[in-house]
Length: 414
Ligand code: GLU
Image (tube, rainbow, N blue to C red; front, side, top):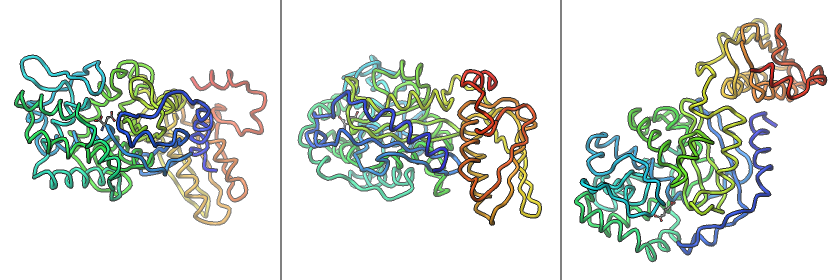
């Protein structure tokens, strides 16, 4: 199996047994979700996609739609105009809290319900046109045409009195741009859009890539809107758990009560997770646990970033069927993922090519990077010879690696 996929599959297996939490029930149709479903997907800003578990299972996007609609509003109106109606401060309160800023009447941020309804109401056109504009944008982020789960939409429309109350409250404060019922209807439809973990990963990768979808190559929102959206996700994305999330996981993210979470490693990856049982804050239990581990293992915490962000591949030279990859700098997960992808592509080119990976100018290798390179070489053994030029012994072939304890290997990587 492809080495990055193996890492994701292991993460899913490790967390599958965690059965804590319960599916959302306040929207009756969501109570039918399968608590065992569990999928994980990752997409790089080069558009490489990886997945494990039930990553192709469909569920409703719910609150994960909020940052993407915010980025659309920012793209259409600009930050100053949007900020007149919705702020950017974490409320520290639950998603459906009645929290409006004293003085301005603005909802605290676009990721709590009051702020999301106000943001949705900023999208131009009548109700139908506004919804289609939102659907087109979310489809652009996902790179495919997204559909609506009509049952979930009807279920929320029939029971969403608290959201209607929030809409009327914002209307009374003069920050809601549409009739309250219409604003809620568009918002409920937006929440009922169906996605998969893979879709959330592509959507996250589009934000990570400054607003251009790395799979389709199409620009969806401008880079300023993408950056502002990530900032708000970093501070407000995980409901009243956002502070601890930033401390422990360190990735801008947004969760939804359908069990989805989209997390973003800016400039590197989008990650999508799906698992319906939620904790008391409304965040998916397995998604939170798996993202915490993924961030630590892959070294993705944005504020603990010590690796060079630029590509480690200095040159790829090909001479009579032999390929020579010259690497430079520190190799972390993103660097190793890029190298593995490149080596596997070269290995497909012709029968039994020789691929030399030159680490003479590499300064440090994270354990996860060492593992991916070794697994890549081992996995291709039958059809390609992958040779490491490794004077400092930073990456060893697994067969000669037996005397190393994990501790010794980790130490060398520092
Ligand atoms: N449609 C849901 C609501 O407004 C979304 C909540 C969520 O995912 O946090 O209640």
